[in-house]
Image 1 (cartoon, rainbow, N blue to C red):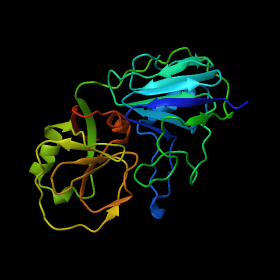
Image 2 (cartoon, helix red, strand yellow):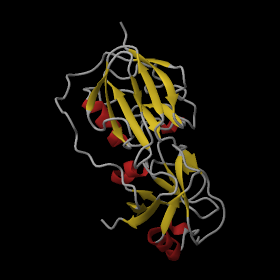
Image 3 (spheres, rainbow, N blue to C red):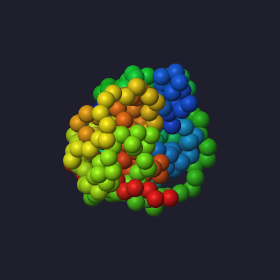
Image 4 (cartoon, rainbow, N blue to C red):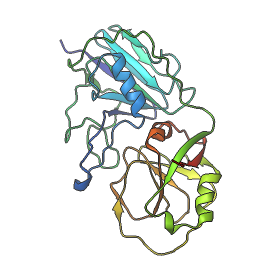
Length: 282
């Protein structure tokens, strides 16, 4: 019998994510995948899953599922009330797993032993909200089945991992290909001020509120390739940080890139939280 569960509630947004679709940007296909890859990978490891197994990405809690068989699962990322974090657990048949709002962070990952058994699209089971590839966002009434491809349980009762920070976050930034489109004062403003995360943020990108950056040159830019972590500056002068579902090309100048080790922190930023960019010096 196939193990499965029914979705009773989704919260603001729940999607299915894995490690994404890398290497297809030339075809106009973005990577997508989990926004906080470290937490996604941890949840899978705790239940003995393959590193690329599909899991649930829950935005700001609110998920509720009813088990139709005994299920082993693990929760990692933003710490939600009502559930154990960073530890394997058993959800018995007929029991309900319910995630409350997170204390800090934005995105929580729920991995079930065996992974979610949904059909891959172009080699990935990730939901890409920008392109529409992959499974639709999870909806109330969905019944999701689990696969059987897993290894032995790791024998870990609890992973001692820090929660996502709840106060101001500081991330490192490197100059981008269009740094010279901005004055030195503009760069110093980027790396010197405290930004506020806008509510107009999603899996495509994080928008910020703050002081606009001063440009050194006007005019338009021919559309060019975009990467995860790019800080694109639209006409408003306020940065947009590209996350997992970012477009593969764009026509606004990229002043810099957030350093790769800090991208998972950015995937956990919630509206109203403050952030500072610090220039990476080496």
